[in-house]
Image 1 (spheres, rainbow, N blue to C red):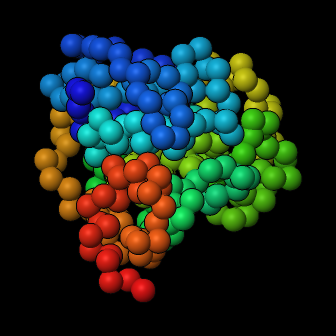
Image 2: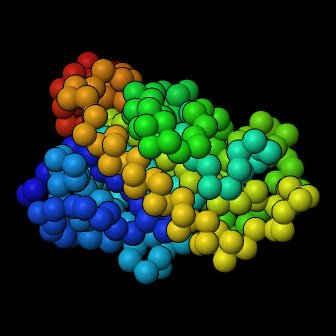
Length: 293
């Protein structure tokens, strides 16, 4: 099967990447169902890249229904080590304006009932998630955004809400009181699952609006988001084309060995089906856990 070490998760407004060569579509079956769509493999700026439109072609899957486990597993099966996630978000701070870009470094999870772990069905694992985004990949995106002369904010809290409805004014003000900088409906559970799969994950967030808290702006509408997205996504594509050829060959971040001490279930107690389903993620660690009681 063809491989790529870099994955791009396209959010609202980003459904394809111009400039890719040697393009082919790959459909992948996973133990967790089908991904959002076929994965587009090709070369971009000299590097092998796997592109997955998060909401599917035609934007037919809403945020709460995304097959996140299948998406992450499928990219992992192609050899992807780093995922750049492009996300449409609303701003919760005056200084973060529509059409700005944000590279968040923290998360608040306000989603409800999303399937956010691979460790079920007879296996328990506890990853460290204090730093939810890969610091190395985030730094690279920040530097690339600066080179692209984009207005970018490095760091900040991404609040992930369930959706698909937009925030109420009360919710928007509550999120602001918590110190959140941007609000969106994706990133989670992707970031958690990527860490469990020992993949680097960083967000390139495109600001489309001021949510609904700002008294000087009309409440967020789909038309407003799509209009600003068209402009913001063009900038995001420029940043991706600068970041991709600058990826370091080796990974020395916490993401690369996130499962090293995370699995607490002794292999003899893990059901065979679970071992098989998760072999891509945990196979290399099972032999090291034989003496766990």
